[in-house]
Image (cartoon, rainbow, N blue to C red; front, side, top):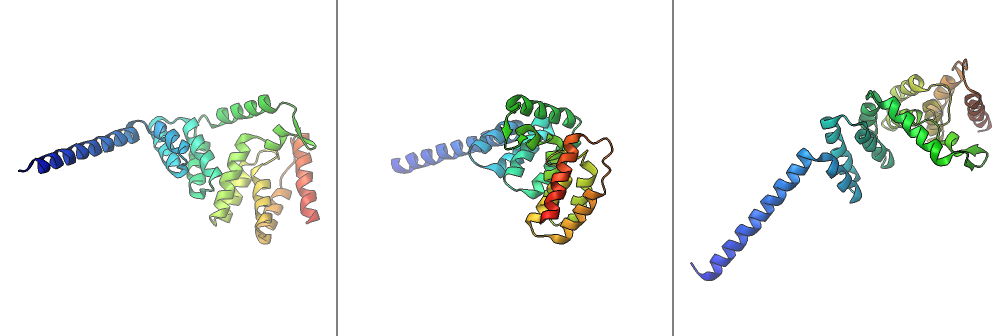
Length: 215
């Protein structure tokens, strides 16, 4: 065997060994450190991959921060299937209420009494749990499950804070020019009992009602 062939074979063997090592390293990261891969893939602009890794990480650790991350990225990227699947797991997590309360507190500390127009920013943002339920309902609507979207919105709207599921779904129908569904959501909204509502809830309800009467 010529010297050239020996060198070439040695080189190919080395490259094959390096490739195998890389495959094993990536496989180990995927299997044992999905949260690390979640962050790396997101930083690289691979949002769909980051959601996939986040789902795997949640299966291993049941960490609500991870599934909340997946839900947030899915919302940002209009990944409707993932908004529904990840969002449902997030809202069913036993730490969901505590997580949302912490997010609301953080918003309050961040924005305080800062105003945007005539409203406080924290009031515009609304409650985080209502936001998540609203986004899941909208994703269902976008996927064609209008009945499921309406039922989820009705079930999970508590009071009538800004960005609640019913209001968001109604406004989404309006933006889509879906008059039949808009009317259906309007009927649901107007059928709500206002007993025990806060003053801010009533104010926002009146704002939505005025908008509907104006269009």
